[in-house]
Amino acid sequence: MKRNETQKDAIVLFLGGIDCSLAAILLRKKQFRVHLLHYNHGAVISNDLHIKRFNELKSLIGEENILLKEISHAGLFRKLSLANIEDDFSKYRTNLICLGCRMAMHCETIIYAKLNDISYVADGSVKYQDTFPEQNSLSLNYFKELYKHYGIEYTTLLANVNSSKEVKYQLLDNGISIQSMEDTCLFNNTFSPASEEHISSFIEERLEICKSYIDQRLQIA
Image 1 (cartoon, one colour):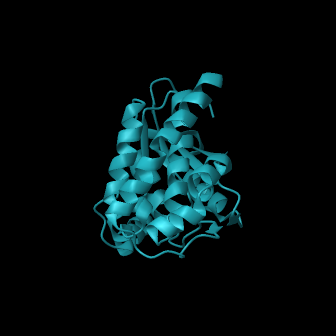
Image 2 (cartoon, rainbow, N blue to C red):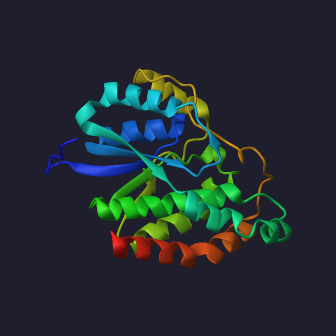
Image 3 (cartoon, rainbow, N blue to C red):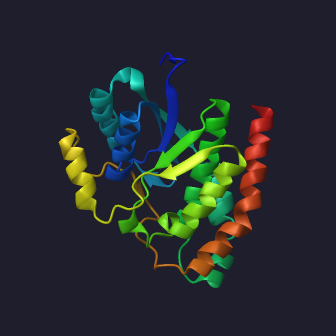
């Protein structure tokens, strides 16, 4: 896709679900060209439905205003989520694998943003899913600070949305289907709510790993 030098670019962490799809639409309404980053950590069952959702969005937004980029975050995911899995379960008594996965996504997003001179990132985190550790407001604040460290603005456009119905109605108004088109992750729906103390501890233990990974990747790019 040829870049218009006068057009602003923004990134959406794109899983194919309804929330990130609406985030992409809202960014386009703000006149951004939207980069959808879709991630694979190697432990998913994919039927490529996210491509169908991308094509829906492309038809709505215009091919010149949106692109899809497939990104692997398998290596960093294993380091953050699986390398110390026995100790993590003993310490936290709940599954924080998805939180480590989301941290790895954000690291790869920062790298992509820096390499493509993009300074604005959004995702589809919503209030009605804030029991998920990776969408808890505490986690989102940590992510925001990590992006800020690299000169990037990170926002959650749907942070105040209390119901999936609100998202679905907005998608329908724009002619987008309301079925989730996310890949099936082997670790989905396998956790109990985590305390904010545990979320904070988990993230802080891994922040330097994240920064070191990002810095090394940017040095060799």
